[in-house]
Length: 445
Image 1 (cartoon, helix red, strand yellow):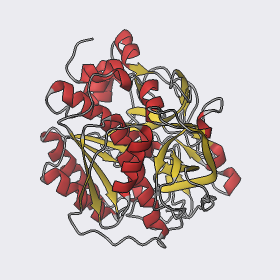
Image 2 (image 1 turned 120 degrees about the horizontal axis):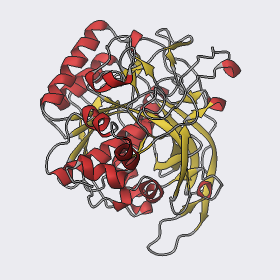
Image 3 (image 1 turned 180 degrees about the vertical axis):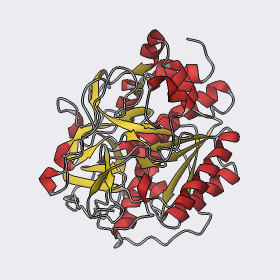
């Protein structure tokens, strides 16, 4: 993985500070050994922000980054309003979300508790499963710190969307492909939950063939059990870090490219920072930090049945999208950053989308009184009739996912434009949860 460091944060001297953190998923923003066969989340930080003022009793606090135009950050209430989650008559009760990550964050329960108290989200317990043993946390290991940030984002924001769902955090002992495969295999074999979120990935070309085969067999087993599979599509646009970590190549991200997985791409959301009122979205592309929504075509998998009508050369990703902007990120509590306990950070990247889509699946499962199961055939079928599609999705038609590396001595890799309907930048688009979730839950509109 590429050793690109964006850490610019300063140690907090006041409570309730906010730093900008991009929860990116492949290029190692924290220095880490470059190698193929491993997955490393990338995290970026910038100067801290402060609360804009004290909140009224019964009202979540306002952060300064919510007051810009367009808004620079969002809390749970704003994201839920923007995507219509607040209008869904479900909270995820009775369903279980499985989040797969590597290493650990020893403060995750405390951080979720602070997050819940601050934003008035119902409290929850993080159920930690470490099938191959829990690796002791090393604050001096930047790779582990990066994964701790990923855990923060995944847990807090899956919970924000489905606050009554059970959360099972399955932790691999490292970010090596074999270890992540082992942890995920445990979750599948032991049928730990209804939906699995995977906010990590690497270029398909960098995954060993035996790992790829084992992974696909595992996903097939999960699908037979009715488990929904989700994965982030990547954060370097149409590029991925090369297998030796020295440059970037045109590639799509595994495991997102597996046709049994629903790949989640990214957008830049423009919504009101206080009310969450939806304004618009465009393709996530922030050249100033070498970041954009992952998307493109698989070199491993042919065009799946659910994409046959699109005339694609092979399996195309992403399938769906969600807000991923670094400068329009979501707020989360991260005590293992090195900046001190109970600090609020702003996260972005397609890492934010996978756990939130997992939350939507949990809501739909509650309405259905059963697992949602294999998601791709369902969402593509719903896109076939234009008025139905328009009622269920925000179709993103502007922007592209070209990777702009020229400012940093990296190549520029031409991406794909957003277009009407499905496209290899934002997939089918972002959810109108108030209509999509009930349909996935078996309720006719």
